[in-house]
Image 1 (tube, rainbow, N blue to C red):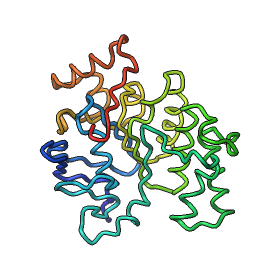
Image 2: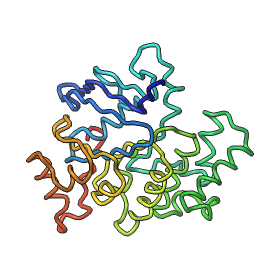
Image 3: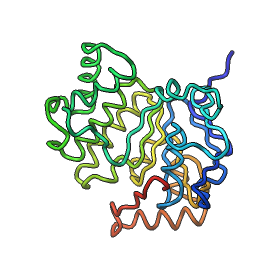
Image 4: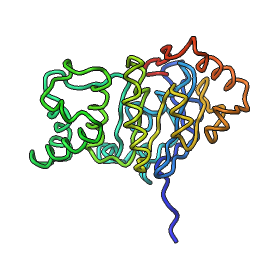
Length: 261
């Protein structure tokens, strides 16, 4: 019987920006259908880790293997490999000058070469899935932040990814809009989508994640089931971080960080 290929294998991953050593030897495996939530303070390397998984940032050394394809191999067809990976950013990155429907169709037409009818059908299916089908003719500026983020998720799903990366998808949202986006992500998890999620939403991590990874200072400090890492952390650095983010006076305080987070 052939062993199942891991969805993601990260091996001894390092990333530096000049003298700043952001990732310092990350090893992480994600199996198909798993949801892995990555938590940690701003500047710990979480966002950089995600960006290395689809080569938005080129690793300084180490390997990133997605669905058995080594993205760090010099001969890899990076565009073909990247098509399997959908990414949702902190900011929604929608095209402001075209409608919601066209935002979800454009990648399908240009990258997947779908004809207009097929692209529109897939766009409408995914906009229905995320609960914004009534906004197909609207422009991004006419939507709330939560609606824009759900369109961004629909756009990523329309490309038929096998892996979804979420980089602080709720950090730019008003607190009352967070729940709608998390509900969409929860449904994706229930459907078996493989997901690597950088988040500060601890309730979501405890409920949905198969494993929680706590990063600090460019390394993985602690990793395990959510009840262990969030509920009964073994490492002092993890405990200090969780005390801070779970303190009600710090609820939804931004620790989003930038590209080098």
